[in-house]
Length: 193
Image (cartoon, rainbow, N blue to C red; front, side, top):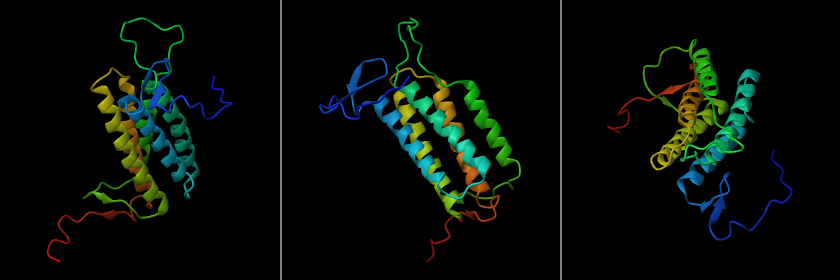
């Protein structure tokens, strides 16, 4: 259970922060960067939800915001390296959460026409915000991979973030009148200007 009655503690003033297992690391540690970037992505999704969205998409994004807190909780507690089970097992993202995203991607992508080029971010405000969220999601995934290069993590975290960026892309297309308002990249269009 979370209980916050004091917002500042001054415990991070020396450049260290506490992880979920009680250990302390520099605020620049890959783990802190990873779950901090997850928090940034969650904030961008909060902005997306202020746009005019179909109710279904808003409900999905609300669910995803909750899942992103699960990811932050997962990342802030290092994996046990000694094989011992802790007294209170940490929250870990599950394969079922990834599957839910895959099902949503398939559902949203089905009515879209196949693309003939890459899409330039823009169109409706909702689509533009979703494209921003997609790029922050990709950066978040990269920060988690950087952590994974040095420490074990729950593999479902990277799967979730990878599927989420796919979902955000197709949702952006959906919010551009099923892609009708999407602007396609024209390779080299301005080279002769």
